[in-house]
Image (cartoon, rainbow, N blue to C red):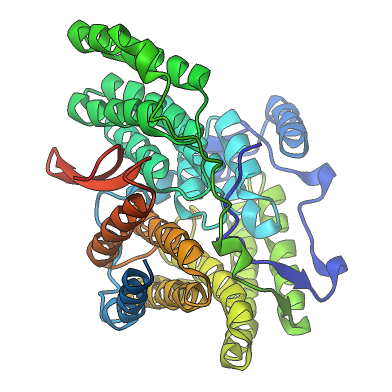
Length: 478
């Protein structure tokens, strides 16, 4: 089974498991029920029946390494000077249409539901915008699920909103090249699906980059079996043919037997290193109590919103906003204790802090579909700066941990870390302008690792197309 990246999911041992609440089964959210009832009109019996159905869905070289380590350590000082402005306009996060988000479904993660379940339920209910916002702002989804959701959203949007479908497909393509938690077979499949989607929204030039990446994976991967290579190459050829390029398709098929043998080197995929470098933290009682109160308030809003009058909706939103502010106060005290922890546990705390700041940033951007904490809405830029600072600390903390490993593991770990950092930037989760610096380090580290492997396997390169920067997997140095 494919390894799944859990580096962005902090290992938390709650002080009291009984203090975690979720939406009661009998009061779960309606699916396609009266989504237009946001103005306050009562839901019909049919809508109530659909509500119950959605309830069922929701529940149902040593010197090189030394120099590299110093370069990574130096990143802290440069990244800390980076702007805290929101991510660039090509990230899916800034393309969220907050006014179209369904509040009753959007707050479900605040009530304790996993992001993946909320995204699937929103898509089943026809609430693509709510699903889009939940994927875009999730700091907890593993690469396997995030890439799949972006592909699905691209297919849902390509006929009605091709511009944002393009963003979704490009996000999936970024995952294919950068996501540390993906197998090379998954990278090839995601590349193929992204290529087909991009071709469907008339992004032929970018689609060809995705197809080239899928072909490179089939030819140069060190872990694929011959049958997997052949199948991938045949699908690439079919995609070229469907795009009207019969010549390239024929060239691939004419050499498919030899290409299916691969580079002549077979290696097992290396295990991820970052998840083993962070420790765990115990949430103090004050935080668990505040978290439980917030989950109850979110559950109340989720279950009552559609049938509530405007005045009751205001009360529900106000109660959740107050709970969020109380939790923020408790968490701020907890995060202030970071310096007293060992470095691995500091990393666990930073993961938790990043997730919480992302919630605050989403609240500030009205991306839950309603106003919850007006005070935060006027501080979105400051929250972006805080979020960028937390990501910077996290990356450099892992850099220090990598210095404790042997040369081979350190080389692998550095590429894994930089991949993750660049991906955070590309998705808009890491605000500011740190991508260029991390990108340069990633390309250099990937090239060094490729050289250590005897110039075999896949290497990450950067390429410009259609005026945009892309990261791709190649079989040779750029």
